[in-house]
Image 1 (cartoon, one colour):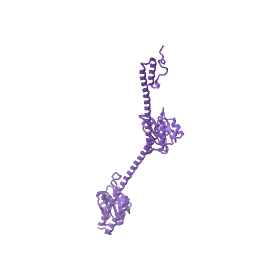
Image 2: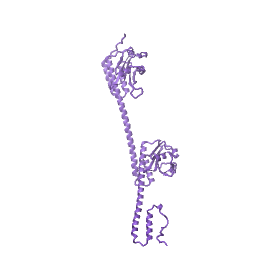
Image 3: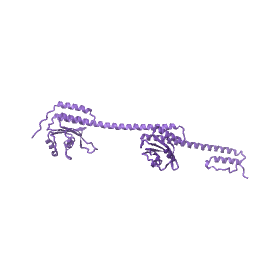
Image 4: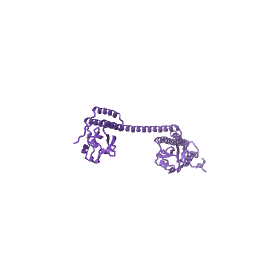
Length: 429
């Protein structure tokens, strides 16, 4: 029986120095590539191996989960992965090492084919090899594969060197994996915080626009003037947009106010009116909700002159449960609304809507006060008439006064025209 010649012994002090150097390199490594590069360079350099390979188990949930995948190789043998994977359905040194969490050493090809007979049919141009498991927290995560061109006796100091190197490598790989996951979580959290900050900025801009509008209107009650002021405030925050205020006029939505940048052609069309069945106008009227039309279709909305606009928003303005009017905003600079733009449009139109409701409420109050004053005056007239019943000698004059008092309580449209039925106080002949 032929035994391999003893390999030249590598002084333990030299291996210890290599371990110290690798430990320092691994402490500063921040990527799997750096970790694997340090380990493989040390193995090849310290032991004179012809090649070294690191293969890791594919994580659960990934394609080919549980299989070994080569992530780093140094030295000869570009076919390291297929050679060490063995034959499908059969065990392999790399797989057994990580599965059993046990270092495997083969000093000759005969030892390898004796342990794995199915490999005898495959040409293996190497004479010695070792497979060491990479174990992290008691779980095998991969294998360190070392190959020699000549027969090689793995002395105890070399086995210790490889075991320590494999343990350090597994720990370093686990650390950089945790570091990578931490960086990913930090990046995700940073992106989340940036999104929240943008949202707060957008909300702040919208609030500023709302406050600016409420401050600008003062005691104004004219609806068109209020709409024009809303347009001005909106364009102060979004100078690139156009805006218009529409009211229903029979079967058409007609513009009553618009921004100064609106072209004459567009102005003529929106003043002439938009049909009720125009796509986005109809949607806003039907849903009673803001419609932000990204990719504005001018033809479908019966406004061919607005085809230069890429996005249009239509916001219904409600008074109670009743649709009062529509506020339109358009941009020619984009085909989609940003969240900031949407927030500002909503804020300004919310302010306009609240103001319209307040104006309508004040109008109703004023009307009620007028009606109440008329009724009070009529009651006072009746009281005076009652006092005069015992003093006046003209009954027809009293009747005339009573009739006038009653008529004053009726709406103007229901009051009879012509002279008094009593003949202006003259008794019938």
